[in-house]
Image (cartoon, rainbow, N blue to C red; front, side, top):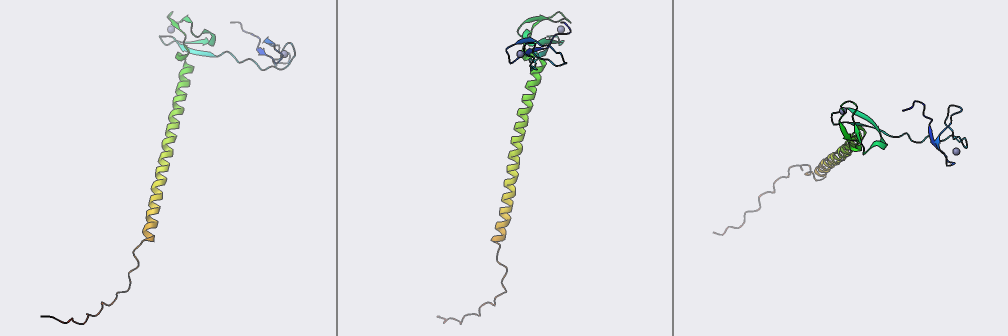
Amino acid sequence: MTQAVAESVTCVCGYSGPAIAPAGRAVCPICHTPAAAAPAPRILRIPCPRGHVLKAGEHLLGQQVVCPDCNEMFLLREDDSLERRQELKRLRQAEEERIAKLWLARAIWAAAFIVASLVGMIAFSFAYRAPPPRPPVEPPSDPAPAARTE
Ligand SMILES: [Zn+2]
Ligand SMILES: [Zn+2]
């Protein structure tokens, strides 16, 4: 790979190709619009079957390559790349976090429900508390003895 590759631009004027950088900033050589640099080609790190990590540009995906370390031939697959694995890991973690949050939310709701029922029970027991003991009432005097029939 050559060292000084001119930065590639895709300009609004339709130009696409190497930019010029007269003031240290990439501009379109046609209209001199400071052009947004074309996205750098994605470099994937893909381990060979023996674990040597190769850096491969996106355009090499799906091609058979030979590992320079062990001469093992293998297919460059995006799914094997460390980037893809990291992405999957990130997605899995995000999913786990989502589930954890879901459980946390459920736990909070459960706790809130328990607290609410406790408060309700306490309020209920206050509201329906047995009335304060009344002063003892003299037992009514014995009724007049009923006429006995013997
Ligand atoms: Zn232009
Ligand atoms: Zn290898």
